[in-house]
Structure formats: structure tokens, C-alpha cells
Length: 192
Image: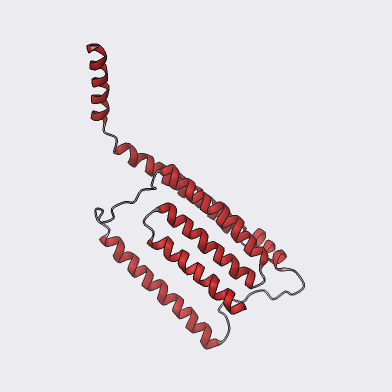
């Protein structure tokens, strides 16, 4: 039964991830991300990590994806863009190189872990306290600044995206057309 749950959740995660990457519409991409996050929550439940599954649904699917959708709707990028018009050749090569390096690094970690037989990082092995207590202790002591800095970076990213989108939208406004429309209306008003 565990194998069936794992395979089903893994397929949901993969289908959602492919939907995020291949979708032309940003809203469809965000909704595919929700499917991926639900699949990961099922995998957490299969590992008896109910708290992490609840946090996955509440925080990521509930808050982060809603934030993404809010920014998408606020910026008005819910239409597809023609990527063939913009010069992305250098970015595509850089992305391919970065993906290759990431794959090589992750492969090296997997091979190093399989050779030594031990995971590369040691996890705390305290059986007297619950997982939730251990997680809370780590989040509010050791990793507190990392989470605070991440939240500040997310806010900066959202504000930067709004500023850039407002600037770009203002650049496309045709002032001459607006003046012509006002002039025609005034001329029609005088003619009648």
C-alpha cells in the first residue's frame, strides 16, 4: 500500500512540476504548483510527518501560492508573452550551464552518500522529544535569522516586481493617442 501511495503522490508531483514549467499561462502555472505542493504533503503524511504536511498545505499552498497569484493579477501578466521577440539567447545558455552544474553537484552528493553509506549531514537523533518540538527549537534558535532574512527578501522581491511592472506599463502608454481622443471629444462637443 505504501508503494501505491508513493507512486501516486510522486506522479502528482511530477505532473504539477511539468505543468509549472510548460504552462503558457502564469495562473495555470501557479495552480500546477498547488498540485505539486499537495503531492508533497501526501508524501509527508506517508512518512508520518503530519505536522509538516499541514504546514505544507497551510503555508505553501495556502499563503505563498496565493501571494504569487496576487502578484500575477496585480501586475497584469496573466497574458502570454512572445519569447521569440525578446533576446534570450544568452540567458538560455546561462540557464543550461547552471542546470548542468546543479545536476553534477547533486549527482556527486548522491554518489558520495552511497559510497560512504552515511548521509552527508547528520540529523539530530533525540527520541525523547517530539519532532514538532525539535523543529520549533531549530526554527526559533539556530535558523531564526535565515527565516527572517528570507521573509525580507520575499517582500523586497514583491515590491521590486510591482515597481518594475508599473514602470514598464507606463512606458507603453501612448500620450499622443490620449491627446487625440480628448481633442476629438472636445471638437465633437463644439460641433454639436
